[in-house]
Every structure is written in C-alpha cells, then in structure tokens.
Image 1 (cartoon, rainbow, N blue to C red):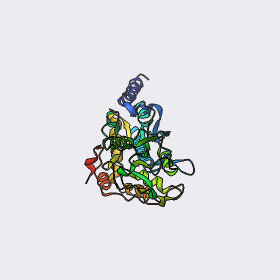
Image 2: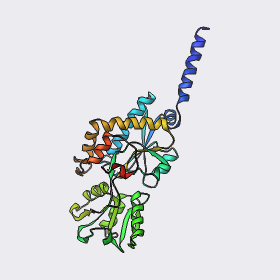
Image 3: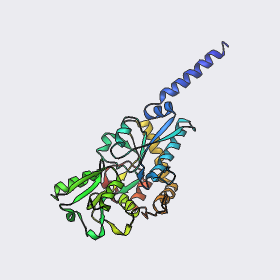
Image 4: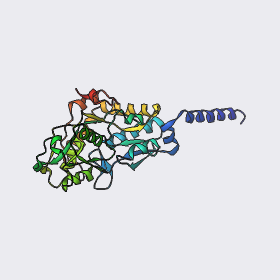
Amino acid sequence: MRLLAPVLAALLLGTSAQAGERTGTLRKIQDSNRLVLGVRDTAPPFSYLDQNQKVVGFAVDICLKIAEAVKRELKMPALGVAMEFVNSSSRIPLITNGTVDLECGTTTNNADRKKQVAFTNTHFLTATRFVSKKDQNIAGLDDLRGKTVASVAGSTNILMLIKANNERKLGITVIAAKDVPEAFLLVETGRAAAFVMDDVQLSVVAAQSKDPAAYVVSQETLSNPEPYGIMLRRDDPAFKAVVDRATADLYRSAEIATIYDRWFLKPVPPRGLNYNVPLSSALRWAFAHPTDEADPAFYAR
C-alpha cells in the first residue's frame, strides 16, 4: 500500500493537471458534458425543422461534423449535443453569454460582428438582393422609391437597405420583420413592395411559396458576395483551433460536395423542393482554401 500511494497520487495529479489544461469553451463543454448548437427553425436549407420537427440543414450538418471533432478532442464519445433556437436578434447575445457554443445558420461574417464574436471557415457566399412580385415590374432599387420594403431585424441586409435608402434619398419606408417567412409574407400580401435579404434565402422562400412563378429576385445587388460562417466566442483560441481544423478538413474533402448537393441540388424535406443553387466557382475556391476572411472583396475571384 505504501508503494501504491505515490502512484495513485501521481495519477490523481496527472488527471487534475489534464483537466486544468482545458480552458474556455472546451472546459465548459467538458464540465457540462454537452455541446450546445444554436439553430434556426425557419432558415432552409441551412437550418430548419423538417416534417418530423427535427432540425436539419446544410449548416446543421457542418456543425454536427464539428461536434464529432470536439468529441475526439475531448475523448468524450458520449458527449451530448443539444440544440437551442436562435434568431437574428438573439444569436450574438446567446453566443457571448455562453448559452450557445456554435451558431449554425446563415450569419454573415463581417468586421463589425468580429468585434463581438469569432467565425470559423466560410461555408457559403451570398449577395444582398431583393424579391418582388413580377407584375409590379420592379427592376431595381430606384423603382422602390417611396415604397415600403421589408428586411429582417438584426441582419446585415437591413443595414444595407437603410444605407442605400439614405444615400440615394429613395424615401423608402423600411419594415423590420422578425424572420424570413414574416418578411416574405409582407410581400405576398402586398404590405411591402419588396423584401431585401441574402439572394439564396430569397430564392428558397420564393420556391416555397404558393406561386413561385409570381416572384422575381433582382439582378441589382446591394453588396459583393458575402461569407457565411459558423459563429463561436471570441478570444478562445483552443476551441477555435478545433473548429477551424474540423471545417478545413471537411471543406477540403469530397464529402462537402455530397453535403452541398444534398441541400441545394436535390429535393429536400418536407415538401421535396429542389432549390437548384449550383456551387459557385468562388465558393468552390473558398472550400479548397479554407478561410475566415470577412472582407467580401477577398472572394471576388
């Protein structure tokens, strides 16, 4: 027993030291035995509820791959993965206050947001446009002069709309909707002439409508192609290194094409719609060269 005592003490000290090495989010996940994903219920095909009320989507698949990497890093194969619903207004506060560990949706990575949170490697590129009814013959922003236009509260898109409205003195009345479905409903019911948002989300919501042929997405853009990234807490290099490595490995592999095709080029639940959004050359390049670069000009290739 006397001989065993020092050995046991050393083992205990080693375990304690190993636990002490973990900091930040990795320590939080280890101590709570769960990783919390911030997800959306109405952002297809990135993050939404299917016919079984299960959260699915392109960004969700990516986050689940990250979760597997976290399990390996912590040597916790039975680690729980929980999901918490977020929206445009709550997503950053829920990341910064520790409620959510990763935000898996359609959040644009930009310089202003990087003052509050961090992002992993880009998983999508999109530009800001608007959708309107074809019979309104709205070709560009100038045709919206003096009209009511919707966007989503807390999004970069509504800031771009306000900026363009002020700079071009368009006299647009801006309505801030809580989410994409609510904003599109304003156009559908005639309460707004147009809805400003990321072009991929506009294509999706129009495809889901009762009469997809009745709507058109503008050729005019309010932005360069902007990067979406999975969001995480700032100043947490250990956790970011795990997340960056997991996404870089995935994006450089053939598996990312399979995941992309599943959500953008094939029928998806619950209605079997095919959004038919081909992988752009800019995004293909970004997958081959993983980066968390926020500047849209960086992707203009």
